[in-house]
Length: 389
Ligand code: PLP
Image (cartoon, rainbow, N blue to C red; front, side, top):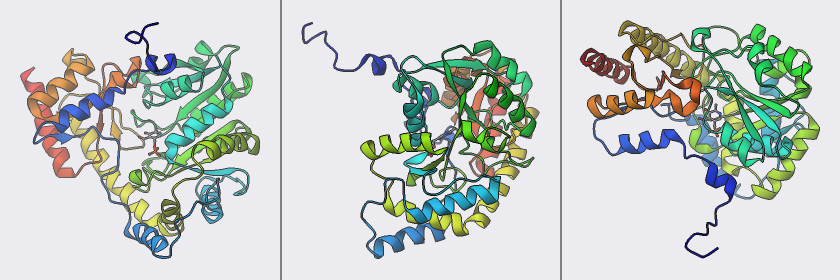
């Protein structure tokens, strides 16, 4: 092959599509006066006590590597947090790993369990990383489509339709990004029966577990029989408003966790030390701050979802996270066209549902992690936009 036609990029990476969210961010960033309901992150600054703990660690000169698995004190705090909040029991030594965000945890989990060609079920609409991470691990992502009319809940029948002898694992995400849907104990128990029947592993992404508003939260490994089959992925980004700290964690049975640790020690060494000191403080004393943030999101959710329905965009009441996922079917537009026109004509940025998989078409994702004033203004602009159609 001559130099002009040769590519140095691997076939797997060449095949990956760039994230559809980025395009809208870039467009919105180039315009003035845009209200962005596009970003998937809290609008709170991390609690002061957490920032202070991080600063103190630097003042004390704690600037070296930690243990590969993370500071033992942090793993102990994670273990007691999982026990008091969700009734889970994981040993800090051997079953808990501190990672660089839930993002790295997902990557490690997949790389630790996937053999070439293994299938991993991804529930759509889904967080944009799952499919590409499965492919990068050498697996084949298999989509399951959930249904807006059923509030995007995953039903056992939908798993039955795609499961095969090559299926290794299922990625669950509750509360879900982008739909905000929460699977309750009954939903999870029904899924658990299928997981047992087909001998699957579950990667349970519970990064939004702190942000649920209506029912008590059930963590997947707390469902009978599921602890030994689950890789629990979580972190500090969303509930503790710590996206920039890049800190997450995994809890899993020892065999899988040690496999993940092996990859982690070669690729990452350890998560950032100063961030780990901040996280210890967040788990020790951060509950009140998390409660206040949760109350604030709940108020905004109630206002925003009601308002979407009032202006004619049907939207189910999402039980968690900070996303509303209204249907735009009444406009007759594709989600990409809707998002582009809304941005250009009214300067409101939302994310087209199609970027979260085919079943997201006909919907848009709006983050309500914005001030109430901004949300009110966004609704006013969206109403004006709809009235012109
Ligand atoms: N999982 C889901 C469902 C998310 O929405 C996100 C971030 O948007 C992540 C994982 C990644 O989180 P982190 O910042 O901990 O890497």
